[in-house]
Each structure stands twice: as C-alpha cells, then as structure tokens.
Length: 276
Image 1 (tube, rainbow, N blue to C red):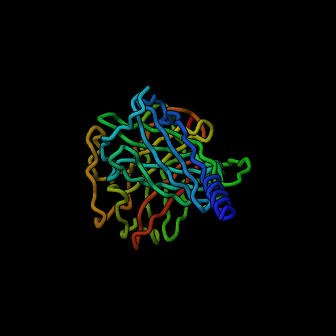
Image 2 (image 1 turned 90 degrees about the horizontal axis):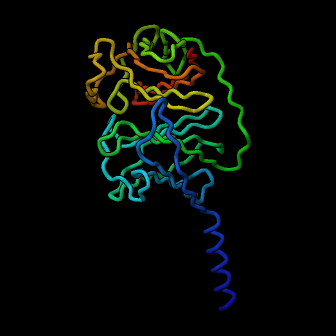
Image 3 (image 1 turned 180 degrees about the vertical axis):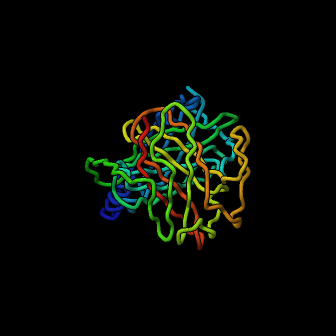
C-alpha cells in the first residue's frame, strides 16, 4: 500500500513538473504609442511540448483586477499575433473572453522556437493597447533573422499579390495599392477575413514594434475617421485594394498580408519593406 501511495505521489509530481505555468508581463509594442494599461500572459504547458494553454489579461496600472469590457474590432475582442524569432512562422489567433476578464485559448505551435506574442485589444473605451511577450516553445537555439528582398509581387497558391511599392517614408501616411490577381486578372473569388477585405501586420525587424492595418476597397470610403463597416463572410471581396499605413520609424519591416480566397482558404502574402 505504501509503495502504491509513493508511486502515485511521484507520478503526480512528474505531471506537475512537466506542466509549468509562466506568467509574463508584456511590453508596449504599438509603434509610437505608450500603453495605458498593463498586459499579462500566463502560458501553461500541456502534454504535447508544442501545445500551450494561453491566458491573456489587461489591468489598470498598479491594479491586479482584470479589465472585463473590450470593444469589438474586426469581429473580435482580442487579436493575437504569434511570430517566430526568425520571422518564418506567422499565426493570427483569437482567444475567447471569459466573464473573469481573461482571454483563453489552447494553441498548438507548429515548431519549437522563440515566439514574439502580440496581444492587440481595446479595453474599456481606450484605443488599441498592444503588448508583446517573449515565449519560448520547446528546446530552442538562437535564430537567424534574415529578410531577403521580395520585390513588389509574390505568388501565394493560385494568386499573385502585387504592391505598388515596397519602399516607405517614415513619419507620414502612405497609400499602397494592392492587387490580388488570379490568371493575370483581379481575383473574383475572394471573401472577407474578419469583416474586412484583408489584414496587414508590419513588424520592425530590429525593435519588433508592431503596426496592424486593414486594406480597403479602391472604391470604398477613404475617410479614416469613420469606423470601417464589417463585411459578412459570404460577401465578395475586391481584388484591388488600398492600404493606408503610417510607419513612424525608419528600418526594415516584414509585412504579412492575410486574405481569404476560394474555398474559404486563408492565404498569407509576405513582403520585405524598407522605410527611410
């Protein structure tokens, strides 16, 4: 009997040791802005070494009480972007808000790596609050981050994605034409992703600052002061778009442009951008 109890306790200890929980405090990551909240991430390992239970929350400064009210922005209350340190893996996920003010999700990572985790939300009636967390998954070695030149056009599945420029000017609003082509013509089988034609995330390859914008239809209302009306998933999305972006720092950037194509499949076009 005593042997059985000892074995049980040793097994319990082993399970506990294999599932450590780590609470991380985020750093403000929205380029050119200071956070008005504090952001936290608790990551708990699951049985699979590549699987983590992620728990995000925000508090007022010097408070331990999670904020419970968030605005819905692009159909979601929190956008989380996961990027490996070498910039080769990009994931855009959406944890669900619990009544306690915690955003919860179980996430399986595609490979072992150091991940930069960005939590982007609008708590209470504030504008975007974006926090970056550093999360190591599995046994990781230092990664080499090289951003090769991509030019202005890339092929993604059956689509060609063309930009009018990959050179930006820091400190001013830029307008970039985006064309999503199929068989050489503007694609006609596109659908909205999270209520808009596409999503664009820029990361500075040095300080990892974050910019998240949404391309709009060429013939859409370009008044940036108005909220963008959400498009239903079943709607047709245009193949010709306009991207308004204000980069505040010179440097090299990685752009991930997400759009939804035929069969509801999500595609990601990746570009290297230079801002001077």
